[in-house]
Amino acid sequence: MTREIFERGDAVAVLPWDPIRDEVILVEQFRPGALREQENPWMLELVAGMVADGETDTEVAIRESAEEAGCRLDRLEPIATFYPSAGACSEQIRAFIGRVVSAGVGEVHGLAEEHEDLLVHAISRVEALRMLDANKINNGHTLIALQWLARHGEALREQWLSK
Image (cartoon, rainbow, N blue to C red; front, side, top):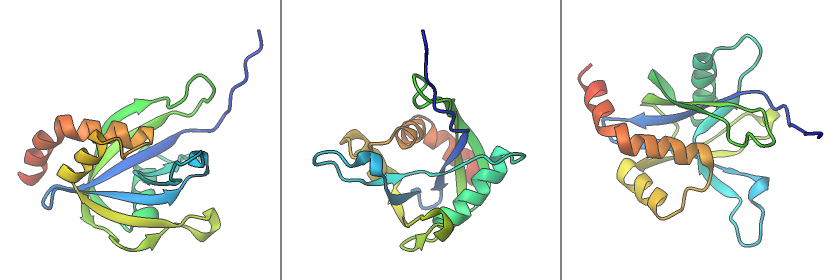
């Protein structure tokens, strides 16, 4: 038996969250894989990026948050580590939640050399979870992070606001 695998490298994904305003920061970007029938290829997603050689997950999270969403974070907590498509791809994603100090809401961010065109949104946690329940969040890493926030958000909010 021969098996093929796409060696992609690992990625870090971050759900920036402002516990004071109780808002998540999501970026809207074009995803060609979603160009199917009536699907909208513009998706709301977490901030995310590939891990370069010698780079730590924390460094990637901080870098990508600034590049993609104009976000400055002062705390970072792990959410989950997972393989989004282990049947064909070696990529592992390590997801985090980050406490937002500031964000470029309403601005377009991303690196020109990476052909990024990301519109930054602030969405209340309640509305983000409504969107999740209404099947309006259609990419895996964002689903996972928002489900985690639904389960653990109140406890984390209390912890972050007490420090």
